[in-house]
Amino acid sequence: MSGNQEQRHIYYDRDLGIEAYQLSGIVQKFPNHFHEYYVIGFIEGGKRHLWCKGQEYDLNAGDLILFNPRDNHYCAPIGRELLDYRAVNIHTDVMLGIAREITGKDYIPHFTQNVVYQSEIALSVAEVYEAMLLDMPKLKKEESLFCLIDQILQEYAAPFEMVGDDGPGEKTKMLCSYMEQHLAENIALDDLASMIGAGKSYLLRSFTKEVGVSPYRYLQTIRIERAKKLLEQGIGPIDVAGMTGFSDQSHFTNYFKEFIGLTPKQYQRIFSDTLPAGE
Image (cartoon, rainbow, N blue to C red; front, side, top):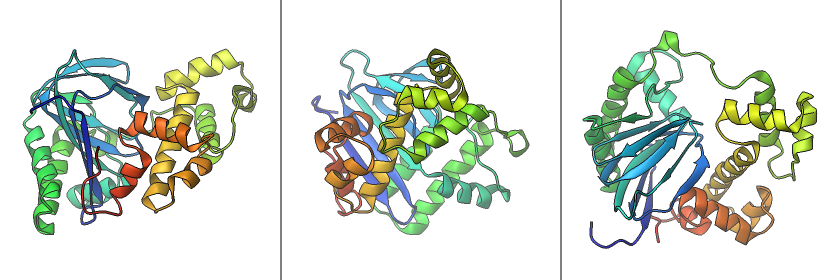
């Protein structure tokens, strides 16, 4: 990789209904956040330091990264080491369909490891990424994706009978649901504390422990996820900012780029142009 200029590209494949994502150069630090979809990625070149669900990892070329929906994580450069990171983002409904085809069962796959060092599966991710990037025939893209998911389900996913609900407690789920339904409003900590009859300090500690991010970071993340869906529908960034609770478009743009690495307009081009979105 020549030079050290940051580049970010996202490709949306309509045949597969998934995204391919690339970060290269000296890439910004991303804040603690989560995604509503599965992420299967690998380090093509360079290094990166990752924090995920209370664990720390130093990533190098050939390492595989697996995120379940809502696995909280954040990452940062190591020195000025150049990075080339590539991933595919798979929404839950797409993953459920693939898992059903492979296993014959209806269940939500759960990755048991977030990082696999020097994994051969990274080559399978690269094959899917390349097939999408080059817009290969649909059969080739589907075959590559199914082979990739089959490998991961066999080696790094909990068996069907072991998948259970080990997430947040009922009170925390209620708070999450409330914030999701009222994300455009000016929610206060007092509002949340009164809902569960607890003090603000206790709420902050328990929520962060169970969810992996603070209530405010949770609200920021679901606002950005909602904003992405609205942008995908062609709604203008100015309107999206108001619909998702941001005080103005500048505030919205700054947060969006902090989380996604692209401006809202750059992200929206993915779904209106055939060319990749990037800087």
